[in-house]
Length: 222
Image (tube, rainbow, N blue to C red; front, side, top):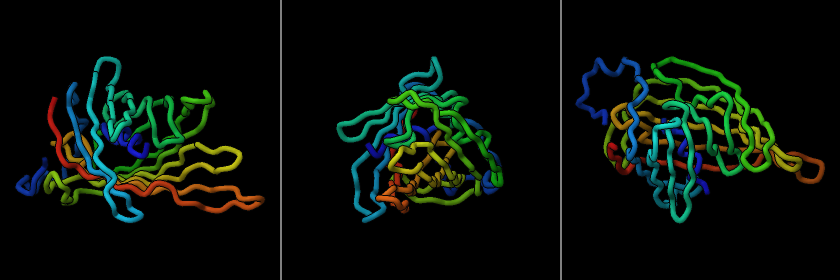
């Protein structure tokens, strides 16, 4: 299902927050069992709604366990620590365990921070080892409005290669932009843009993949 990779983004500051806070870094959030975030999903091809997705922390013993539910489907993920995906899906084709854990949000976050990482993904279906690469940067503080309200958020951009190629299709190139709010403990907005190469006869051409936006509608503490 299209919502599965949202668990990799989990790891309100209002306009009344002190201006001094805008230049501060964001530490890793405190995570407790029962924390829940609910998002509306928008198809960015036609801007039509695709329903709601809920992410819930189900355990914090062996890493952070998260269950993502949308429609009649659900998918689990495990974070080694806030912002570091150890097991779960990136999209419908790239799922499994990551060694070391994939840094989606390398806390602490601060404007101007950049990171680059290559990890091994053991595919959940085939058992093959594939490389996943991420280049990311923290752009800075922005004001963003979503159904849950208006927030001051750190804008984080990621460019990823998912290593999900096969003999007929090249690997997925994925761009994510996330607006992380410390008081929420997760993103209030996430956009996804994908494309991949596809082999047709003897030629390869670029094809569009997922184009999605997630916007927070509500959250609760554990």
